[in-house]
Length: 283
Length: 263
Image 1 (cartoon, chains in turn yellow, cyan):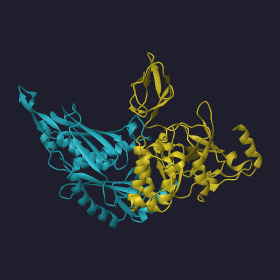
Image 2 (cartoon, each protein chain N blue to C red; image 1 turned 45 degrees about the horizontal axis):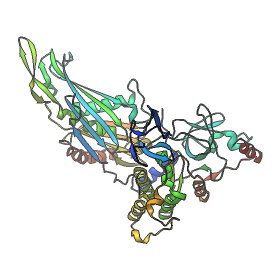
Image 3 (tube, rainbow over the protein chains, first blue to last red; image 1 turned 135 degrees about the vertical axis):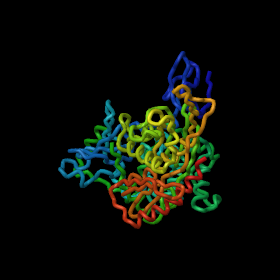
Image 4 (cartoon, rainbow over the protein chains, first blue to last red; image 1 turned 30 degrees about the horizontal axis):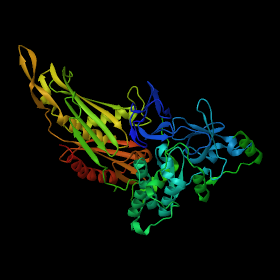
């Protein structure tokens, strides 16, 4: 027996299903019944029920790309705020290799970086790295914070949503999986993008969002909605293409490609190639 | 914990201000959306909930009978206390009040006291022995900048909402008549208006983002007639004479505008 529908909003304690279903993330089992432990949307996959929270904090995971802010400089590393209960660190050796240089000349407190989570250990010490395409320091632009669970929605299927924003506002947009979004373009366009992104965050749990985003963009930019026919790769009924699962797994390749075009990022070439191959082995 | 503002945010906000714009699209002399409800707490004699944008404060008043201070035997007592709840912002910690909390209480108290919002002399029951003590408790629920304007606006509303029982003296004892509740003696509606100085420009009602990068801030408390009853400056940068005069004249208009939100 199941008592809820897919994508229904539930609150903690709501009974979701009987024992024939498995208890997934955001749920618990009591008296052979699956109950929700969060406020969120129900996701049913085969016989597994999980609840995707409406709001969340970012929990670091190896391989994620995140946007972090330098909060402290230590003897051989930078400390970074990654919009999470756990702070991250970037070892100096990752940036300089074996060379010895002064850390604050490269990144100072208050700088914003685009990084990859290299490793998360048992006590949630988050090791960050700058090795990879497009990673580095941001220059200019604005930052917008959204709830990390809504990141997949903002990107859209195969990047449809984010590409629409980019095309319409002519801004560069980079989304970190920790819910920090960096936007750079004309100042007025940055504001348009900010409004749209905040709207997506507000309405991420509803369907037909792509259409509303398109209309909102058209309205803010003062264009007729009809003129803005954009090939989003998926013609079919919008509602279907729009139904993106807000799962934890996100296509991150898309984001990296975006950043590649950006010349606002200072890329860091590690001085020694050997270092890099070593890192890869660990990965 | 000191919050560090990313350089690029500082840059983008400052650049916008230079061009006469603000992050949320407001004009320099425009408040965010203000909402004010009174009587929100059942158990308190008077209460108010005020929202300026996302900043939210809940205010309650508690009148009690007590002995007056020895130097002012015929005057009631007003006590203001502020609680910056940890849920309001990540850098608010629980524990004893910190400097921000003390500053907010004192500035609110000064604006209300010096603006003579409550006629404290009418709160005297028996001279030198029994007076009404009004406790004003402010709880910051959500912090998104400009606590002071919200605190004063809400406090005045809460005081206006407060009802105290009438008192009678029978056989040298004070008898409280809960059947006949009377409002506190209010004779003024002094309100506060805060400006932040960013890159030489003065903007009203700074948001959290703007407060974090501002060079200086000036709060002005003003009575209905336009008399200044309180002033508080914060931040490291100086303010010159012209700036202060300009700010005072804007504050006069803006406090009048704020006053329309009071019931």
